[in-house]
Image (tube, rainbow, N blue to C red; front, side):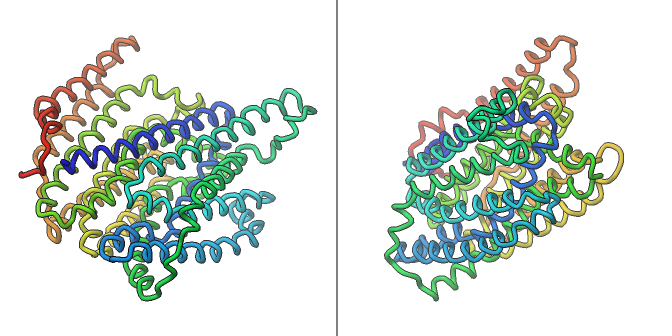
Length: 499
């Protein structure tokens, strides 16, 4: 079977579950922003999920990628899985207990006095995520995409139902019939904190569903293997933490670099508008699920370098389609968030292109994972984190265009663009891949030209006419792809690429 078709099929399976699941999850964004009208309320949710992003990386410390790598190189895959799972179980317990014991003081430091329960719920969410990380990775390594998708979708369904019950129905019952039985379930002092309760319950359901994978660990724990896995994975921990600095630190810095009376609201506005880049994020995440084990599996093939180049090209085309489709339709997509949040809409095109650069970086950076040079990934991501921190510290408190979240958005784009370019330069030196650079640049330039034409220059005064004209530009881009790439020919090809 053509490996490109195989990758596309795996991405589609992961993508259907991820797209459907993320669409349902992201339905919570308008749900929250319309129910909690003040952006400061959504800012609480945005801030704590930023902390969770860091903690998830810290709790898993690169073991998922380590599992993929050593499952290829080691004969006893069961021992690799068992060693990774036992390591994560012990470390999760050791990391979680101190946070629970000192939840009150931690909440005070975070400026949420009296809300130690927020800290407890959040750390338990992270702990349950960590416990299921290796079983999920094993399902990906075994290409069991359907089971992977089923567990993920059940998690999301439970999360949604509890959110709609506690924040939707019970909040309404409390406000209209405070003495009612259902109204008693809602405490206004917790407010949007019920989102953490819903996520924790959903995660516990995932743990129960993954019990067959969690309990069937019969190969024991191998110290020499664990040391080698840690040696491979620890640089990825640094990469992950630096990556989270690039991805979510701006939301934390917005809170602490802006005046206290506006900071939480600015975090909420930025976090809500960030969610509009949903389709880009979904596609990249679905692709990651399928691509990482695919890249490792293909590395021994003679034509792998050509194959990786083709993967990058088609990945870029999909990302550019998402970028144009979203930005040229922002006139109605903006209603995804509540009215008081829409002031932040100008960050959406910047963040979309930033995420496109991040996806390209993921593709380009596979070289250091395949060659075992994970320290390069560490240094590249650390350099990106430095850019993120310097620009955010410089721009967030400033005045003018780059003030507040506009500075954060541009810092994100510059960070990912620099990382993408540097990864390409180093990758071509240590693991040369045949990329069609002129065509990649041509497609990107065309997409940006159409975006600027539609976003900034089409303004007839009639919303329907503007929308039609902008989508005609989108169709132009699609036609160019079909004329140049001839996708029908690719679909008919059954052999491996030859050039």
